[in-house]
Amino acid sequence: MKKILLFAFALVSILKLNAQQCATDEYDAFMKRTNPQYAAERQKMEQQIYFIIKNKQNNPNARIAQNDCQPGGVFTIPVVVHIIHKGEVIGVGTNITDAQVIDAIRGMNDRWRKIIGDGVDLEVQFALAVRDTNNNATNGITRYDGRVFPRYTANGIYYNNNSTGANQDTIINNTVWDRNRYINIWIADIRGAGGWASLYGNYTFFASYNISSNTLAHEMGHTFSLYHTFNGDGSLLSSSTQCPANNDCLLDGDLVCDTPPHRVENCNTTSCAPSGDLLNSFRNYMSYCGATTRFTQGQKERVRAALYNDFERLIYSPTLIPINTTLEVGIDNILNNLNEPICLSEFIPKIKIRNIGTSTITNLKITTYLDGILLNTNNINTTLVSNNSTIFTLNTINFTSSGIHNLKFIIEEMNGSTNDYSSINNQICKDVLVRNNPVNSLCLNLEDNNINFILFNQDTTNILRFISIPGCINVGNKVLKYTKPASAFYNSNTFYLPAVNLDSVYSAYLVFDHAYRESFVNSYAGIRFYKINGCDSASVYFDGNIDASVSGYDSINEWKPIDCSDWKKDSVYLGNKAISNFII
Image (cartoon, rainbow, N blue to C red; front, side, top):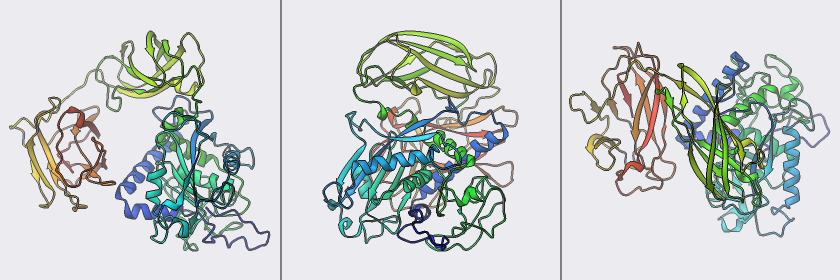
């Protein structure tokens, strides 16, 4: 990111100095251009954040997300800082001191929490991790000699993997810590910018070794899906070409409603149509203006939406709990598949609990709440040793009505104590859709030769066909096979389902099993579902990527699933209209 203006003269509009600016916009454009999966995930993320914020506007009492047990309060997120130096002693050149890192993070927190400045408190703060990936003690700062990476010593790193500098992906892959448990920050000799960040949830950003609190506050804003306040002005490494659109403040510009549109160089006045307090943009940490002092309420709502959309695993990460903590347990997740409607009046919940402390857990008291009312109390005797987890089956829940219900599970006591080190991971919430008496159910069984399934191969390189693969009774032997050579890109084939009338159905899902292994890193298979009403044109219900069901890569040999563990269940919501095909 560019450093905030350091000069006290009047030329405040000359801000986009190449060596000082943030390159997140350029990095994002580069990633969307070169990585289709990144582009698809970015689009999906934006849709989810939009619906969360829109729902909150229409219903101020709505919870931010399905797993949101406590919409208020302050969250502390673990970070790890990787210093990529050039062999200097600590405190010289790129090998900055621990104190510099700690001070920059303190300053970032001061800005995010409004300890300094004005605006609003985002109620999100950051702390250096105290556990590493192997559950050993750490100070959250690592050091790597960057001289092992070709071209780094002479030319540093560029946001777009410019061949002049070191390869960014190589550095990341050799130094990254688990992104499900940490936000990774790389401090390095970066060229052409003061920093850049990923705008979708892989929790990664780079900052110059000339580190500053403003840089970290700005780039962390990008990490939590905040755009520049001048987003949409046409400026990429240059001056602006237009005023950002502002027809719908949640869909245009920086996607925030209380930061008026302006051009990157506009820091005192703007020719763009006014819409609110211009100081919310001119003094915003996400602008390029001098004397930045604030985040806004709209930005806070977007950060909180991103927090529960992409960062939930970091909220409950154990990496901020010291390794010598005696008593600490937490709920990892709910094991039942609650992304689909519950069609049973009697529901048996299963939750996974992890012991993060050093003491063996011998008894637990777990309560179940349904729609805010205490329903069950489970007193469990167990032997849960340190750094292990166990699945517990809780008392049956009897749903007496259809509709959306809220489930909450709370660890009230552990080893007879009501307090452990951290209480935030002692509860988990989930909204569930209950259908006691499903009106219709239909199984389109590939084994049934009387059902008219139609295959349509648009090209000859990606072969779509039915074959028999034994090994998993849960999915049967007859499967639809799709072979995609590593050299084939952007090709598709079609699988037509028989027409199904869903007009009278309360809620419909298409559930399917898939087995998929990537041929190489960053390869992916996309799946697209269409609905067709008679001869009307089709419209997309879902467009996304299939997650690999098996780890590892093989670009040489043809892969086949061998048992049930290779298959993964997935579903797509169809609403209440007729469908007649989906496209892979």
